[in-house]
Length: 161
Image (tube, rainbow, N blue to C red; front, top):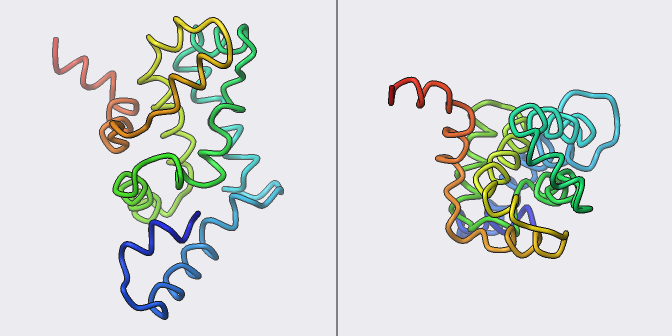
Protein backbone atom coordinates (compact mmCIF):
# COMPACT_ATOMS: atom_id res chain seq x y z
CA UNK A 1 0.00 0.00 0.00
CA UNK A 2 2.92 2.33 0.62
CA UNK A 3 4.29 1.83 -2.87
CA UNK A 4 1.06 2.59 -4.74
CA UNK A 5 1.09 6.40 -4.31
CA UNK A 6 4.78 6.51 -5.23
CA UNK A 7 4.01 4.65 -8.47
CA UNK A 8 2.30 7.81 -9.74
CA UNK A 9 5.60 9.68 -9.56
CA UNK A 10 7.95 7.43 -11.50
CA UNK A 11 7.70 5.68 -14.84
CA UNK A 12 10.90 3.69 -14.39
CA UNK A 13 10.71 0.74 -11.96
CA UNK A 14 14.31 1.24 -10.82
CA UNK A 15 13.68 4.85 -9.78
CA UNK A 16 10.45 3.83 -8.07
CA UNK A 17 12.22 1.09 -6.14
CA UNK A 18 15.00 3.30 -4.79
CA UNK A 19 12.64 6.11 -3.76
CA UNK A 20 10.21 3.66 -2.17
CA UNK A 21 13.03 1.88 -0.34
CA UNK A 22 14.31 5.18 1.08
CA UNK A 23 10.80 6.27 2.09
CA UNK A 24 10.09 2.95 3.76
CA UNK A 25 13.45 2.78 5.54
CA UNK A 26 13.17 6.33 6.87
CA UNK A 27 9.49 6.50 7.80
CA UNK A 28 7.12 3.66 7.01
CA UNK A 29 9.07 0.93 8.80
CA UNK A 30 8.48 2.85 12.07
CA UNK A 31 4.74 2.41 11.57
CA UNK A 32 5.27 -1.33 12.13
CA UNK A 33 7.78 -1.06 14.95
CA UNK A 34 6.71 -1.59 18.54
CA UNK A 35 9.28 0.09 20.76
CA UNK A 36 9.76 3.13 22.92
CA UNK A 37 11.56 4.99 20.14
CA UNK A 38 10.27 8.34 18.96
CA UNK A 39 7.99 8.00 15.96
CA UNK A 40 7.00 4.36 16.32
CA UNK A 41 3.40 3.15 16.21
CA UNK A 42 2.96 3.21 19.99
CA UNK A 43 3.98 6.85 20.26
CA UNK A 44 1.88 7.83 17.25
CA UNK A 45 -1.16 6.06 18.68
CA UNK A 46 -0.66 7.76 22.02
CA UNK A 47 -0.19 11.11 20.28
CA UNK A 48 -3.47 10.66 18.44
CA UNK A 49 -5.37 9.82 21.61
CA UNK A 50 -3.90 12.76 23.54
CA UNK A 51 -4.45 15.31 20.80
CA UNK A 52 -7.96 14.15 19.97
CA UNK A 53 -9.14 13.74 23.54
CA UNK A 54 -7.81 17.16 24.51
CA UNK A 55 -9.27 18.99 21.52
CA UNK A 56 -12.62 17.15 21.22
CA UNK A 57 -13.43 15.47 24.55
CA UNK A 58 -17.18 15.36 23.91
CA UNK A 59 -16.72 13.49 20.63
CA UNK A 60 -14.00 11.28 22.12
CA UNK A 61 -16.26 10.07 24.94
CA UNK A 62 -19.29 9.79 22.66
CA UNK A 63 -17.37 7.42 20.40
CA UNK A 64 -16.28 5.38 23.41
CA UNK A 65 -19.87 5.24 24.67
CA UNK A 66 -21.16 3.77 21.41
CA UNK A 67 -18.40 1.14 21.26
CA UNK A 68 -16.38 2.90 18.55
CA UNK A 69 -13.03 3.68 20.24
CA UNK A 70 -11.38 6.52 18.30
CA UNK A 71 -7.99 4.82 18.09
CA UNK A 72 -9.57 1.68 16.68
CA UNK A 73 -11.27 3.81 14.01
CA UNK A 74 -8.06 5.45 12.82
CA UNK A 75 -5.42 2.83 13.57
CA UNK A 76 -5.21 1.55 9.98
CA UNK A 77 -5.01 5.13 8.72
CA UNK A 78 -1.99 5.66 10.95
CA UNK A 79 -0.32 2.31 10.19
CA UNK A 80 -0.60 2.85 6.44
CA UNK A 81 -0.05 6.63 6.59
CA UNK A 82 -3.47 7.03 4.93
CA UNK A 83 -2.53 4.99 1.83
CA UNK A 84 -5.66 3.18 0.76
CA UNK A 85 -7.98 5.61 2.55
CA UNK A 86 -7.34 9.04 1.06
CA UNK A 87 -7.20 9.81 -2.64
CA UNK A 88 -3.67 9.44 -4.07
CA UNK A 89 -3.17 13.21 -4.42
CA UNK A 90 -4.16 13.71 -0.79
CA UNK A 91 -1.82 10.94 0.39
CA UNK A 92 1.02 12.60 -1.52
CA UNK A 93 0.17 15.98 0.02
CA UNK A 94 0.25 14.43 3.49
CA UNK A 95 3.47 12.57 2.79
CA UNK A 96 4.95 15.82 1.53
CA UNK A 97 4.34 17.25 5.02
CA UNK A 98 5.96 14.19 6.58
CA UNK A 99 9.06 14.76 4.45
CA UNK A 100 9.06 18.52 5.03
CA UNK A 101 8.82 18.21 8.81
CA UNK A 102 10.85 14.99 8.90
CA UNK A 103 8.26 13.57 11.27
CA UNK A 104 5.45 11.06 11.28
CA UNK A 105 3.61 13.06 13.95
CA UNK A 106 1.59 14.71 11.20
CA UNK A 107 -0.18 11.36 10.62
CA UNK A 108 -2.01 11.12 13.98
CA UNK A 109 -2.83 14.82 13.81
CA UNK A 110 -4.36 14.29 10.37
CA UNK A 111 -6.43 11.42 11.79
CA UNK A 112 -7.68 13.68 14.59
CA UNK A 113 -8.44 16.43 12.07
CA UNK A 114 -10.59 14.10 9.97
CA UNK A 115 -12.61 12.97 12.98
CA UNK A 116 -13.00 16.59 14.08
CA UNK A 117 -14.13 17.55 10.58
CA UNK A 118 -16.83 14.87 10.73
CA UNK A 119 -17.75 15.72 14.34
CA UNK A 120 -21.35 16.77 13.72
CA UNK A 121 -22.22 13.59 11.86
CA UNK A 122 -20.27 11.40 14.28
CA UNK A 123 -22.16 12.84 17.26
CA UNK A 124 -25.41 11.79 15.58
CA UNK A 125 -24.26 8.16 15.38
CA UNK A 126 -25.70 5.65 17.81
CA UNK A 127 -23.55 2.61 17.00
CA UNK A 128 -20.14 1.70 15.62
CA UNK A 129 -21.59 0.65 12.26
CA UNK A 130 -22.98 4.14 11.69
CA UNK A 131 -19.58 5.62 12.57
CA UNK A 132 -17.89 3.42 9.97
CA UNK A 133 -20.39 4.56 7.34
CA UNK A 134 -19.69 8.23 8.15
CA UNK A 135 -15.95 7.67 7.81
CA UNK A 136 -16.09 5.41 4.76
CA UNK A 137 -16.09 8.13 2.09
CA UNK A 138 -12.86 10.09 2.01
CA UNK A 139 -13.16 11.26 -1.58
CA UNK A 140 -13.92 14.87 -0.66
CA UNK A 141 -11.32 15.29 2.09
CA UNK A 142 -8.60 17.88 1.58
CA UNK A 143 -6.02 16.78 4.12
CA UNK A 144 -3.77 19.86 4.08
CA UNK A 145 -6.69 22.21 4.64
CA UNK A 146 -8.00 19.98 7.44
CA UNK A 147 -4.59 20.00 9.10
CA UNK A 148 -4.41 23.78 8.88
CA UNK A 149 -7.91 24.21 10.30
CA UNK A 150 -7.20 21.74 13.07
CA UNK A 151 -3.81 23.14 14.05
CA UNK A 152 -4.59 26.83 13.66
CA UNK A 153 -8.30 26.99 14.55
CA UNK A 154 -7.72 29.46 17.39
CA UNK A 155 -5.76 31.80 15.15
CA UNK A 156 -8.34 31.57 12.37
CA UNK A 157 -11.15 32.31 14.84
CA UNK A 158 -9.20 35.28 16.18
CA UNK A 159 -8.79 36.67 12.66
CA UNK A 160 -12.54 36.42 12.11
CA UNK A 161 -13.26 38.46 15.25
